[in-house]
Image (cartoon, helix red, strand yellow):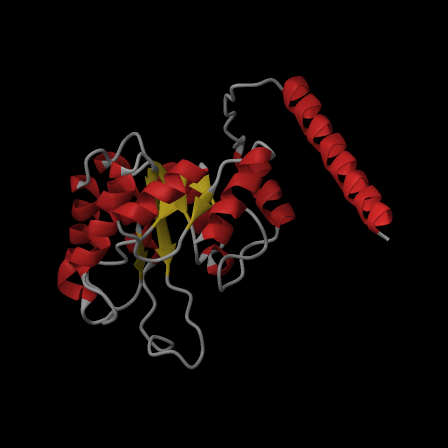
Length: 241
């Protein structure tokens, strides 16, 4: 836990937002993460309460809801969504979105994932979800949680441009950017930039508490302090020899 907290502090020190997914956390752990500066905590509900037991047996649905409550009580922002295409039906997808919308306040981030079938896993041969059903879930999430960032998440590498475009039109207003997710691939960054240019989409501008010049000066000062500390350590070693 100490190493995790230090990771958060170091990332925050360079002016970046922080988000972690570490499984279940109790109240004390959540408080420590918040004190370290963690902005977002990701813990997905994955599916409906009714279908959950068909997918996950290591923890209960109540365990997941309790973790989300601990995260919120500690003052962090909540990132929670689900995975579609695991063999659930439309009622399950509806129930998942209802569970997310019942959280008060709504999660700041709602990742909607399409199952990525991995060979050798129990769901490798599950029937593909109709892309229109996936788009419908995006649209309903946007209606039910109007202030949340609905994130088009895992599975984009298997989606064509038309499906992704429909997802954005339906209400998705965020993606996970970069070539790799936790365990699966993600579209190349240049492909995303080309798609955004084609669709006329632009990155959201985030206001920070400091200007770019101020941030650059702060980072330069931190770099100088690091060099100075390393030099002092070298001199201390020389003096002891």
